[in-house]
Length: 129
Picture 1 (cartoon, rainbow, N blue to C red):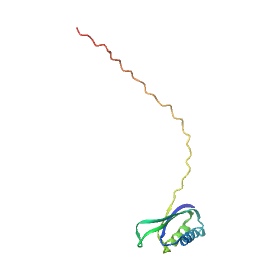
Picture 2 (spheres, one colour):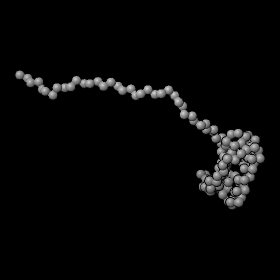
Picture 3 (tube, rainbow, N blue to C red):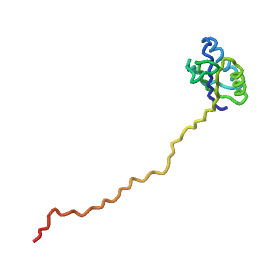
Picture 4 (spheres, rainbow, N blue to C red):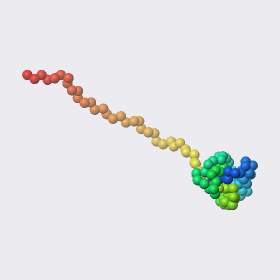
């Protein structure tokens, strides 16, 4: 299963109970289709960058979930058909592989350039006769 990030914006005129119920409904759609919820976060009520359906604000919800294609399709269908959702986006998160420390060949000691000595100028001034 791959991990996806889902962000959706819900109308701002919903109360907390309706918002929680809607979020749980979306989570149930994912789990019913074999998905697993990793993280759910409410980013709160925010002003929209531009009006959407004559609305100026909305509740932003963020969710990370591990799911397969059927769960994604059902979740998107539920989000698309809901009149409370203004916008949504689903993005696949890249799997981050742990970086192993590579033990390579030892680095040679720093090379010191030979110092070229310049001939000293005599401080004595040749006397002209």
